[in-house]
Length: 216
Image 1 (spheres, rainbow, N blue to C red):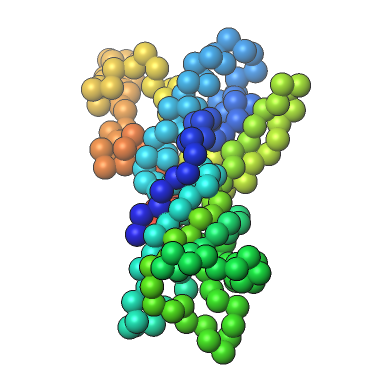
Image 2: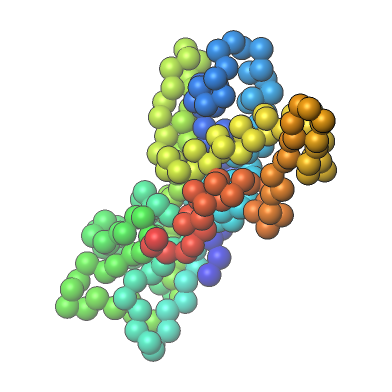
């Protein structure tokens, strides 16, 4: 199965607020705002890449093949959380809107169940499911007010941790592992695991569960 996005992709925006990052860093002035915004955007891209599955809210279409055996109790969609199922076709024939409205949706896992408990299994065939799914990031309106999104707090916190690490690393030699100065002290830098894609271990741990398909 492959999830195909319909329409243009949503713009990538930071998944954590500048105000929260500045509070984490103890910064009260605006001198570093431009750099911090860049760190947040880079961190957002790194976190989404590490998770490795679509998360931003969009309209999608999945093609799902249901075989006669074993019988299929639910259609598993590729993107979740699911907000709305727009259309379902089986072998080119569209399901009636009333049938679609009656579908039982486990939105957090992206599973669709038939409402008829006496015949719960999906008939064999090729299905196309068009639906809206994904998380919505917070948006700052022109008047400065923030329209909250629904991204999980763990993802937003991971973005802040990665951005903070970039802030602290600015101007630092990334190859330096240890430095000693007689009578002053020593300094060493944490060496990040390349398999984490630039994330700190803490950030990777925060978002690890979002990499798995289906229910956590």
